[in-house]
Image (tube, one colour):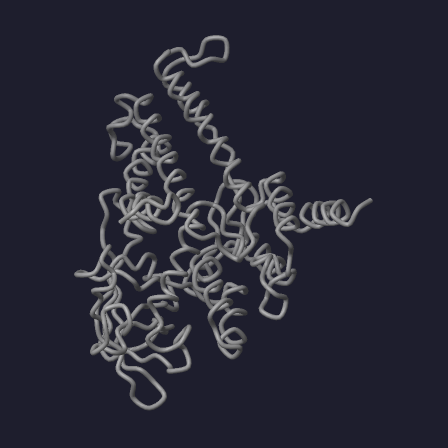
Length: 395
């Protein structure tokens, strides 16, 4: 038996024995928040995977990982998917800021912060956009002024997803206002549990409020928590965005199980509303649309796996924009298809009109997923990157 075969066999046996029933199938995946209480099985699953280094399988062991190769990582994902095991940990700690610290952080920063990320000992928000700085991120105005061993931060960040549950935030701030708009920015780590930080949820059309606005009024950050050096935030921040986009695309192997794909039951859901004939969807137009979507979904999964297999660094480059965009568009198409099949059942906002909870949830998911071509970089930004950096088209 080869080493790879032995790894698969050992992994399969360990997962079968150690993954609790409550950590299999659909359900919540921890983001490491100290304010969210976990079910006993989910807590046990997280603790066991932390001990094994499999919350961040490809990270070095000294920072909480298991130092798996790309092939071993792929096998781990296969074996977890086989038993419907959920990832033990997700979020911006293991997928965004952790890999960025691993690449740009000092040894002290790696030693202090990476075990926190890998162990799920704190959830992270992302402080990039501002009320006047969205796609034009370089126009951000949040300032950080050095006072002794700390920076004093004042400003406002918006679309700070899940900040109401988070313990820390990584934020782009202006440390040298006199420099050019790109050169005077730094990436800083900030504790959200302090005076001077105020988080306010922003209601969405779907009824949920995962997005927030975060206000800093004389908040404090340690001078030792500037990642990648003072005034180098534009370079570091762009690299972090590649980790973000590759996570959205399902090809980020630097953190948690970003490459894991759920098995689609869309044909069964569609068939429920448009009728079955010999196990086929009766409506020919919807049947053709469903087949096209399933073909695109399989192509997307193959592309994800190819990107992971070909990965030579800890995050893909500009290819992540292409895979992220096609993944988002495919998920939105699935929602649109289901809404078409549901007909009048897609018009309910609650169960008072006779709709089931699953139907109401599908409608809200359809609305929420409209954000997929905005979050992580808008569709237009991704197309720009693809045109310039992938296809090599002129500005």
